[in-house]
Image 1 (cartoon, each protein chain N blue to C red):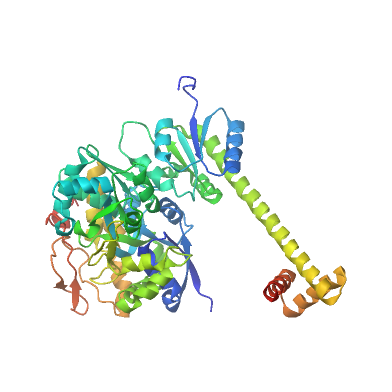
Image 2: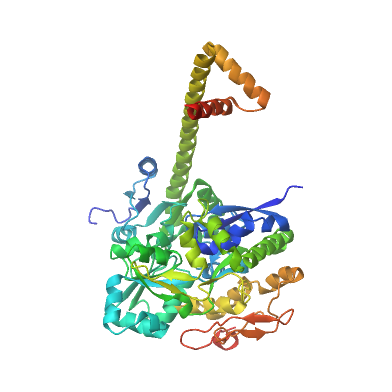
Length: 198
Length: 394
């Protein structure tokens, strides 16, 4: 590409999840002046990567398309192809951090380590950040779902036994404690039973 | 007493059966180890996690631990193979259009061997072939390079071998990305059923006894954790023996088909275990003897000569030092540990650690612990044998 500075590193981010892709792209923009392309679709991945000829490919460690990338990396050909960053054992610490964050990187042979480091540091930080955000989101969703079930169970008790809201909640708590269960388990059992009994 | 837990990686394929059965039916626990099976999305993930210690052991394509030990795949790390998990299991499929051209040239599916089928395929390809395999370092790739190479179609000039995940083979064929594939069952039959491919050959027709998947650990792990290694290998070996009983086939198919493993209809898994391949969308099936083998003929035994064949082929193709490749291969397949760990529980194992690969054309008795061991046929399609003494530089 004519408008690409000769020294500018071209990075491909293979990521289907839009939020994570944006998080990585933003991080890379802060870390330096890179030419970043997001590839969001697995179909035709090989063709797109060959056309793009990136210096660095960032991809989720768990992405099933990684095997395809391995194939591209070892294929014989005249063009320069990215090889897995893991071939360089000089920085075990970084490799371990990458695995833990769930990111794998393929870097074209010969790119200087000091030029790769900020990219990998950023990728590792952003992958970790995304995992944390997702964990928090999952926890919030789960809490919300529990809340709903408990409210429904409370409503069932209130109408069936003529209890107030506090009394209904108190009864569930007492039952849970007596049976060594959580309140949500008791609520779930109540809701299931009510559904079954119609 | 709480059991030690080992984290063991696998890829959801029929040949993960010995690991799945060892964990599900309690063979491993009876030997004193709990297997926490970890379903992995790719061979790259298995390889990296095992190398870095996120897994204790893993199912691997037989060439991968050798390639890792040679330093050509992922982190260069010495890996060791404690056991072969499965022998054979691959099929070759081509697009229906290519199959029609092969027929037009006089090819007859039922009467054709690997040489005739290969020649018909090369003639029908009109120039070059692009063929999909699950991973660049795989028995699938080795079989293709050997088979088509011997018949005159060599890489990279005439043969382009590409990596495509097995469940995507049918789609890649439909999209015109590949002309053919070599893939483990049931994915060949699945592609045939979808009308995307016609199965023209079983991998076994190229090499009758090809080590397909292996049980791999990091170099030195078995010596550092002798109790765990012993329990793991014994549990997996007992699972393989259980799988060899035809009465257990349906139960094995049910277990493997489960959501945690292959997540496919159990009939699809059973078809493979029963040695049947669906060859075309019209519903034709072909029986393939030893389509996949877990136990018989010392299938679990990690012959050093198998590793040497793989290493020699890879080194020659990639222009690597052949003597060094042979050394890495010999260290990688632990025939000695296999014998040492399984001997005391009555496993009948070969007395030798290397054999001439491809010299057996029939079931043949060999020297073993009890003297009653038979090895199955292991011939290559071209009839040429591989003698480690003669054919490697070491």
